[in-house]
Length: 219
Picture 1: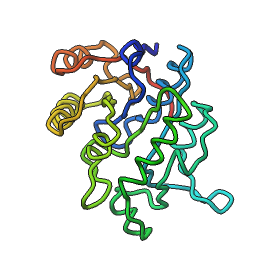
Picture 2: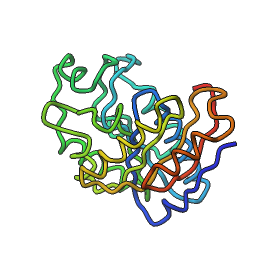
Picture 3: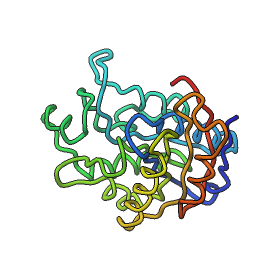
């Protein structure tokens, strides 16, 4: 069963979703949060500022994660605002940007975020990779989060090693001076932690509160 507590989000107008690694279900969790917020009566916009790994659709590069956020939010925002940097190659963003001949610039991201904030009362921003995956040689995701003044939610992919990865991410977010709202467990391996021991140990190990847990789903 999926269990989400969006009461943590009720006083907020935005959130940045990061993860313990790439491929741990940030988009799955972000879509679930958007749907829960909309069910609670919020007007939500999704944003994927930087996406590496895109498909050419009607002559334009499109990323499936960004499209999933748009489909969940139904905000009417245009694609270029939701995903200002759509990078074709599915690799680390700083490498994908270099291969595309693109420089990721913070003012561009801020402008897009401002547009979305003007169209909705809550903007959910999904990061790329893990927290310390840089956007460029001179720009970290923490720089973007501070500029947008967003609290952070960490999605923890439940698998072997998740306690270490979750604690490292938590420490890194706090060390960056950003506000860590909490973490969300995402079951990415069918049958892992059926008895809940890992989840309980993780809950005891983390400084920040748990926002909920998402059951395994084919993603």
